[in-house]
Structures are given as C-alpha cells and as structure tokens.
Length: 107
Picture 1 (cartoon, one colour):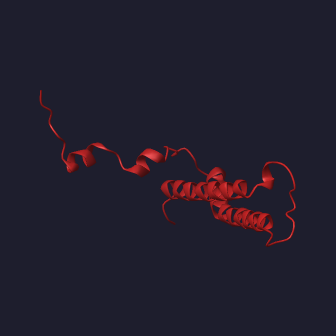
Picture 2 (tube, helix red, strand yellow; picture 1 turned 60 degrees about the vertical axis):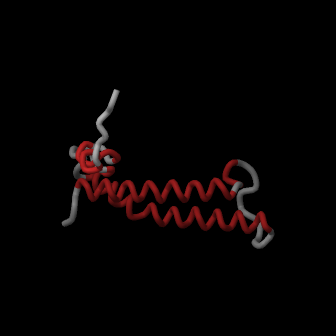
Picture 3 (cartoon, one colour; picture 1 turned 90 degrees about the horizontal axis):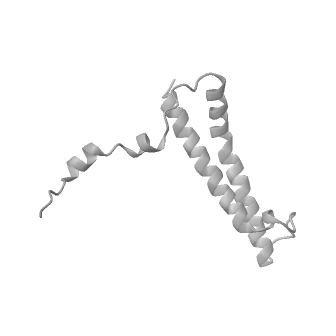
C-alpha cells in the first residue's frame, strides 16, 4: 500500500489562485451597477474610519478618559461592536475594490 506524493509545482498547477476562487464571475455587471460599486468602494473606508473612531470613543468613555457616549443602551453601546463594524466595513471596501478592478481593470 503506497501512495504517490505530489510535488509543489503539481499542487500549484491543480489549485486555482485565491483571487479566482474568492471573486465570483460577474462579467454581466456593467453600467450603473458598476458605477455604484465603484462609489461604494471609495466611500466605505471613510465609514470604517468613523466606526473605528466611535469605537475608540466608547472604549475611552468606558475607561473614564472621555465624556459620555451618545448611545447608552442597546447593541451599539458596546465598543466591540463598533470595532467589528469598522473591520467588516473595511473588508467590504477591499472586496468591492478588487471586484471592480477585476471587471474594469484600468482606464
């Protein structure tokens, strides 16, 4: 009972690149939808920064270093939620940017 080990070059030849596996085929996406995705990819990092700033404010308010935070109760009253939202928003912006570049490389 023996098995043949694969070389690294054979594994690379059989495995598609990560960008091919992660990004779906959206060749049908053109026009206004592509423009909307481009605008979203540009403005989402600003929202991620704002969410991170709110998370820092909430964390400092919890430590007593800043004034009262404007959300006293609920899910948005926790600093972890704001930082998680910031990370998710930034990851979404990067994904949309790569998606737009795949569809429309450079003008």
